[in-house]
Image (cartoon, rainbow, N blue to C red; front, side):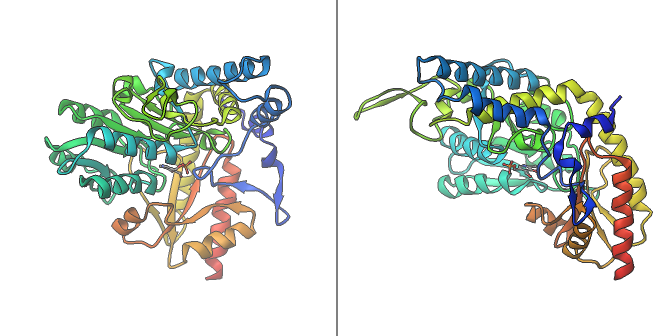
Length: 404
Ligand code: PLP
């Protein structure tokens, strides 16, 4: 059982006020707040363990290297990967997908090929593919989204063809909250011999993910969305694919030997980690993963699912409420519109009441076009949010409604 009051005390920022009102932080899909242990891990690393990794024989460098590699092992275990060679540290989901798109495209894609993405992707799982498609001449195919906010799997099946070289889809939509049936999507793609990449930015913080059980070939997520620091993220990739892919960036650490005539590349995962990595970020990410594991991923999923059902029930009672995304399988993100109130008016007025929500297109403009709306108000929850905070949101919306 989650003791939410005890958990809230682990997050110093949750105790603060904005505009003289207690902060109600419902923007967790954008970034999560940090527990004290993560803040301490960063401070501790700079106070006691700071030295550049992988290059020094001196004590501190070795210690920092060991801690970063222990963090890699922690990530491996957290997402159920087979080997630390398959865990690449990046700056976040965006960089993970850019790395993947650039390197996978160079290795495996040519004119006439097709990559399938979906109509509910974040821009970071659209634009990197468009950039590569522009260079190499392959085509993007889009899985349509239904009115309920689910992927149309029949349409997906009919998109698969011998031209398809990769499927890249989000596990959980950052707008609709839909949890996509990635296992089924992966099985279907694999039955045609097609690898699948999964954007896990909104799944890893909320549900237990095991990349091997899912069968994912690539899986990306961001540290800052799972209570870790900004500037650190992960790309998991299956070793046999990563081995065939060229480096993304050149520089220190990613090489074995450099001459002016020829350079040979380092082993996995270092081939993809050019330059000084954010080793402090990876150490603090490991601390965040320890923290969520100490709460329990199953407990987190259960608590957030109950909180989300409660919020949906209360929000649906508000006259003029339109929830965008009503898939039965959903995570802790709720997008909505109320009557004719513009999302940014709603967001600005809620902010004055101390309630932090996000408004706009949420980096998913094609999805907004599909739904025929300019944007939404989005409340996104964490296991540190409470029913009382949902009640504050509901009464805040009622107040705004009364003003219009
Ligand atoms: N993918 C999804 C589904 C997201 O929600 C986000 C961020 O909101 C991203 C990718 C990009 O993550 P980041 O900005 O941490 O790279």
